Image 1 (tube, rainbow, N blue to C red):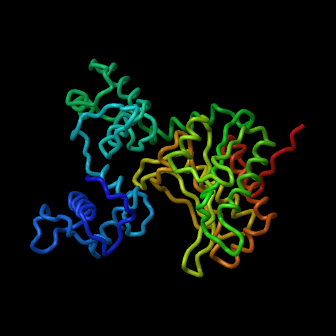
Image 2 (cartoon, rainbow, N blue to C red):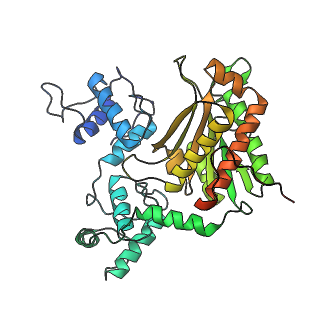
Image 3 (cartoon, helix red, strand yellow):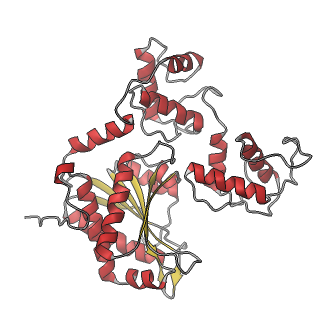
Amino acid sequence: MVSNDGTFPLRPGDRGAAVADVRAALRSLALLQPAAGDDGAAEHDGAVYDEATELAVRHFQQVRGLTVDGHVGEETYRALSEARWSLGDRLLHHDPERPMRGDDVTNLQERLLELGYDAGRADGILGPETEAGLRAFQRDYGLSSDGQCGPATLRALRQLGRKVTGGRPQLLRQSASMVESGPHLIGRVIVVDPGHGGDETGFTAGETTEADLVLDLASRIEGSLAAAGATVYQTRGRDQNPTAAERTAFANDARADLFLSLHMDAHGSEHARGVASYYYGTGSGASSTVGEQFAHLVRREVVARTGLIDLGGYPRTWDLLRMSRMPAVRLDCGYLSHDVDRLLLLDARLRGTIASAVLAAVQRLFLPAEADPPTGTFVLPART
C-alpha cells in the first residue's frame, strides 16, 4: 500500500490517493465491489470514501479484532496492508530493524506451532522466536537452516501433517509454563500502564481527568502488588504520554511476566457503563491464552468486588496487546461519561477496591486449578 499523507483517520467523505489505496485493498480481500463503470484499477486522487467503503471497513475491523468505527486509522491501515500477503508471496526472514508483518507471517507461525515448534505467538510479526522455530524445523527436515522461508521450506511445510494434538499447541505450552512457574508473586515482574498522560488527558469531568484517575489507580495497584512481593513498574509519570510502541517496548525491556493497561471509558450514549477487558486475539483462533485467562479473571474480580456492570472480555489486535512479549490485558474500569460509574470511580475507596481486585486476579492466575478460589473470595495472606 502507498504511504498515507499522515492524516489519520480517513473518514466517510474523504478523497485522495490514500482512499483509493484503501478501496483497492478492500477489493483484493473481496470486501468491496468496484463502483459502476470502474474496473477496480482506475481509481486515483479522486477516489471517495463512500458508504460502501465504510461498511467494508467495518466488516474488516470486526473480523480482524480492531475497534469497529468505520474509520481507517493507523492500525486499520496497517492491518489492511498486512492482509494482502499470502504465504508464498515473498521470501520471509527476520529483520531486526524492520520486522516483517503480514498474514503470511501469521500462517507460517501457525504452521510451525501445529508441527510442534515454538515459534512464539501467532501475531503476524516475524521476530527472533519465529526465526528460531523456523531454523529448528529446517534442521530437523534436512533443509538449509538459514531462517528464511523460501520455496523449499514452503514445500516441506505443506507436505507435513499436524503433529501436535489434544489442543492448541500454544495453549499447551503456555499452560505448562504457568504450572511450572509456581504460585508465588515474589520475583514476578509486572508492568502497569496508566492510559493517556501529559497533554492527552482522556475524558475530562470538571477538574478530574481520566489520565489522573488511572495514574492514581496504577499507583494503588503498584502498592498492592509490591506488598505481595512482586516487582512493579509503571510506564509513565504524570507529565508523560508514551506511544503504544514505547509502552510495550518498556514492558518487553523489563522482561515482564504480565502487562496491564488501565483506562476509564467514555461514550456519547447515556446508557454506556460497566467494565470490559481486552486481550490479544484475532477472534479466529490465534490468541494469547494466558492473556485471555487473565483478562477474564481481573474483570470478574473487579465486578464482584465493586458492583460495576460486567461488559465481558474480547480479543483485539491492538498494537498495545500485539507487540508485548508477555500476556497483556487492557482493563476499562468504567465509564466516566455515565453518572453512576463516574461517582463510583471518583471515590478513592472504590479505586482501592479495584487495586485489591487486580491483586487477587494476579495471584489467582498463578494458582493451580485445584487451589483456585471462587471469584470475589480470595484474600491474600498477610506477609510475615
